[in-house]
Image 1 (spheres, one colour):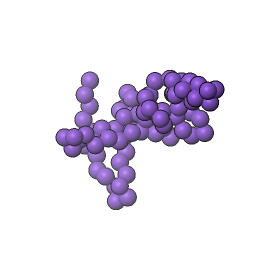
Image 2: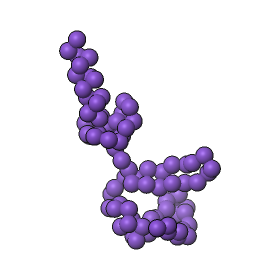
Image 3: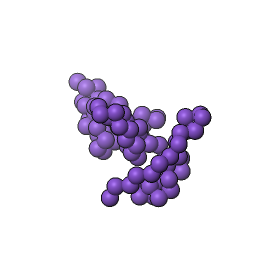
Length: 83
């Protein structure tokens, strides 16, 4: 289902996301969002997903002191320390 809403950017550059869209996307107050500029100059706003700082995957990522690290990269780090 596609939703289009007209909003104005404030003088400080802020933009509010309507509550219906936040609920539909599962975005709670205080949650992070990712803002992407596509190749065809469209802004895409999506719920933030923690990414691995090493390989950039979003699968099986754990937060470690504010940074993301996936299980595969953890295994690689551990195996490199054992050898």
